[in-house]
Image (tube, rainbow over all chains, first blue to last red; front, side, top):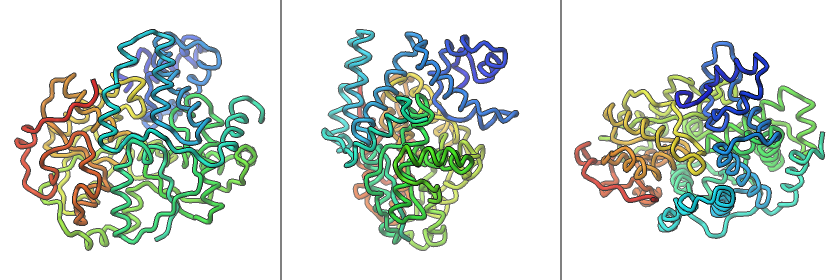
Length: 155
Length: 304
């Protein structure tokens, strides 16, 4: 995965060692990363590069410094979490709708909005798509877990 | 054998064909799965990308539910789920203050004593000898490229399963079922995982390399044990074909599909007919389908 990155894990770690966190946070690489864990597995110094990637992504969102190109992936991950926060389990249809809508509102790209539209009937034909997703019974506890973790109401 | 079952969202969503085939196999092999009552999503990449505490708390709630419901072992057939569960378990085992804090957050005491198994480990626990004895239709002409992807073996310190660079566990199962496996280079490369929607370009590029390397090494099918791998390599295969000008179709089976075929199930009973890179000749393992024949089939168009 590192091959296509503007700053592969080795370079990101070096930037951080040099105190250049801002440059690391601006790298496209932190949102290109697919969390495959290869860097952490092969690091000869046993640096948890994949964990560092997570930390950089979290900081990037906290500080609101994700670049325009990175936003699409940030919006996807946010839509994913808001979906679980509501339902306790992932509702794929809702996730797609929320993600597509939020990217459309930001970028106004009609082609991206409609890109996977033909996939839905094909998934439905294969009984792989459910119009009504599953929800857990105790959604209140899920909401409280999210509140404690994300809203800083638990130390 | 009686164990807790954590399906995860994918197996109850668009990867319900995976659940269908593993349930069929396990029933035949006398493994009773008890779905964990009111399980919640493990948080997947979204949680560990956005909030560290949530990435521990969500899987921890499921570990606690399994413990409270009296289970010592749980099957998590999605490697993303099983890795997240094991990572949370390890983090809490190494940090008592974290364990206590997470227990408060998830409103259940988490001890982290439940063992988490992936599907390969479950088949190993059932025993290769028992599998071999149960074979009704040996996978004679199957030349499978066993594809592990990322999270079955990585991070090694978390999942502690097989060899992160040269895994062999799936090959051993396939060989016990009478199938042949090929040596190839992309067994542990990533397919792009959960980036299918958010970063399709990366997924298509990585998955194309995997499919073409398997083909170049003489494979007539891919075998995976991950719902995300299956989505990227199977559902996206038509898109990959259009982008890179590939006409051949490579069937992508879940591990439980090929075990099921060997146990004598019809492809429809395993949900194989619901795959995308599907063929007129579904019984790749059972007949003498040649690679040339494979190339002649047209893949169904998936997405624009």
